Amino acid sequence: MDQTNILIEKKEKEVLVDHFTGRKYKDRLFLSAVIFFSLITISFVFLIIGAMVLKGYHQINWSFFTQVAPDTFTAMMAKSSGQLIPGGIVNGITGSLYLVGLASLIAIPFGVLIGIYLYENSKKRYAAVIRDITDVLQGVPSIVVGLIVYLWVVVHITHGYSVLAGSVALSIMMLPLIIRSTEESLKMIPDTLKEAAIALGTPYYKVILRVLIPTSFSGLVTGILLAVSRILGETAPLMLTTLGNPAINWNITKPVSAVPLLIWQFYNDPNMVDLIWSSTLFLMGFVLILNLLSKWIAAKRRF
Amino acid sequence: MNEINTTTKPSILSIEDLSIAYDIDKYAVRNVSAKIEKNAITAIMGPSGCGKTTLLRAINRMHELYPNISTKGQIKLYDENIYDMSTIKLRRKIGMVFQRPNPFPTLSIYENVIAGYKLNGIHMKRSERDEIVETSLRDVTLWDEVKNSLHKKGTFLSGGQQQRLCVARALAFKPDVILLDEPTSALDPVSTAKIEDLLVELKKQYTIVLVTHNMSQAARISDNSMFMYLGELIEYEDTKTIFTKPKDPRTEGYLTGKFG
Ligand SMILES: Nc1ncnc2c1ncn2[C@@H]1O[C@H](COP(=O)(O)OP(=O)(O)OP(=O)(O)O)[C@@H](O)[C@H]1O
Ligand SMILES: [Mg+2]
Image 1 (cartoon, rainbow over the protein chains, first blue to last red):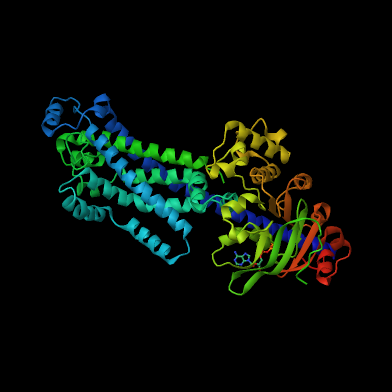
Image 2: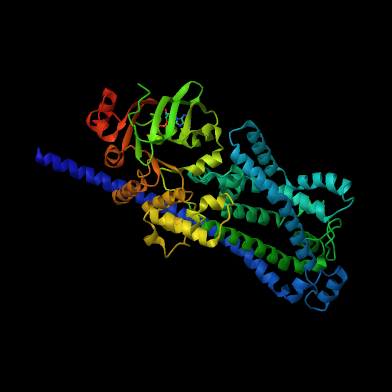
C-alpha cells in the first residue's frame, strides 16, 4: 500500500516536472519572439531618428530659428557653391505656434466642457449621441476636415486662406481627443470624493470647478498635450486652409506658414531638399518633448 | 411598533414617519419615526441592505443625489423641517464622515481641514483659519501627529489618520450633528479604537449618529441603539436595554448572531 503510494507520488512528480519544463520552454520561445519583434520595431525608430539627425543636424544653427525660409534661387546659389542653405524656418515655427495656440484656445474650453457634460450625464441618451458623434469626428480624415473648413471659413468668413481657418480645422481635430480624455480622467475620480465635497455643503458647480477639475488636472493636461502633439504635424488640412506664407504673419485673416507646410514645400523643390531633414528633426523633437512632458505629468497623478 | 422612542432626554433630531424609495414602490426605509438624543451617540444596526445607509444619508439629504429617489415624511432639526432648508445650509449643520477615508488628494492637511470654507469660497483671516485648523485637529487628536507637516498632502497619512482628518473636516463648520457611516470598517483595530475614543469625547460637543456593522462597537460606545430590518425600525432603546433585554425576536436573533 505504502509502496504504491510512493510510486504514484513519484509518477506525479515526473509529470509535474515535465509539465514545468514544457511551460518553461514555451515561455522562452514566447520571450524570444517578443524580444525579436520589439528589436525590429526599435531599430526602425532609431533608423528614422538617426537618418534625420545625420542629414539634418548641420542645417540647425542660430539662423535656422531666426530667419524665414529662403527662396529657391538663393538656395540654388548656395548649393552650387557648396555652402549651407541660408535662412531658417522661423516663419513656419511662428506659424505653427500661432495656429496650434489658437486651435487650443478654441478646442480646450469646448472639449473640456463637453467632456464634463458627458461625465455628468453619462447615462442619458443625448450624451450617447454626442459620444457617437465624437467617435465619428475622430475618424474623419484630416483632409475632409480641411475641405469643410475651407467651405465654411475660407470662402465665407475670411474670404481667403487664413490663420483663423487653419486654427478652426486643427481645433476640430483636437476636439474628440480632448472630449474623450476629459471624460475618462473625470471617470477615474472616486465618487466618494465628490460626495465629500457635497457633504460639506458645496454647490454643485463649485464641486466641479474646485474638486473635479483640480483632481483630474494632470489627466486633462495630458490629454491636451497629446492632442497638441497629434495636430502639430498635420499638413493636409492646413494646405486647404492657411496655404503658407514666406514671411512671418500675425494677422488672423491672412495666410500663415507652418513647419509641416514648409516640409512639404521643401520636398517639392529640389534646391531645398536639404532643409527637409532639419525641419523634420525639429518637428519630431517638439512632438517628443510634448510626449515626454505629458508622460511626466501623467506619472505624477495619484490614485 | 414604529413610534418607538424611549428617550425622555432632550432630542435634537426628530424623524417623523420617514419612507424612502430608490425606485417606485421599492422602499429602502419604511415609516421610520425616531427622536435622536442630543449630545449622545446613537448607533444604527441591522443586517446588510436593511436601509441603514439610506436612513443616515436622508438626515443630511445626501440621499437626494440618486436620481429616482422619493421621500415621504419629514425630519426636523430642532423645530425646522430639513426638507424646507437649503441643502447647503443643512449640510453645514449636519456633517458626514464616510466609510472609506476620503481626504481631497490635491489639498494639504491644513487645506483639507478647512475644505468646507475653501470650496465654498468663504474667506477668513489667516488667524481665524489657523485657529479652526488647530482646534479641529486637536478635537480629533491628530494635532500632535501632524502639526509639523500641515502643508503636506493629506493622502500621505495612514488610513486611520486620514479618517480622523475627515472627521476634523466635518468638525470645522462646528456642526450640530455628525453622521458616520461605518467609519471604522476600513481600519485596523488600533485606529478603530482611536476613532471610538474620539467619538466618545466628541459627544460632549456634538450629537453623533453612527451606522455600524460591528455590534460590539455599538455596545462599547453608543448611548442609544436602533435595530433596523428590511427598511423598518424594529427596535430603538438605550443601548444597555437593547443588548440585555431585546423585546423583538428579530433583534435578539441579530444580536445573538443568528443572522446578519
Ligand atoms: N443607489 C441605489 N439604487 C437602488 N437601490 C439601492 C441603492 N442603494 C441602496 N439600494 C437598496 O436599498 C436598500 C437599502 O440599502 P442601504 O445601502 O441603505 O443598506 P445598508 O443597511 O446600508 O446596507 P449595508 O450594511 O450593506 O451598507 C437595499 O435593498 C439596496 O439594495
Ligand atoms: Mg451601508
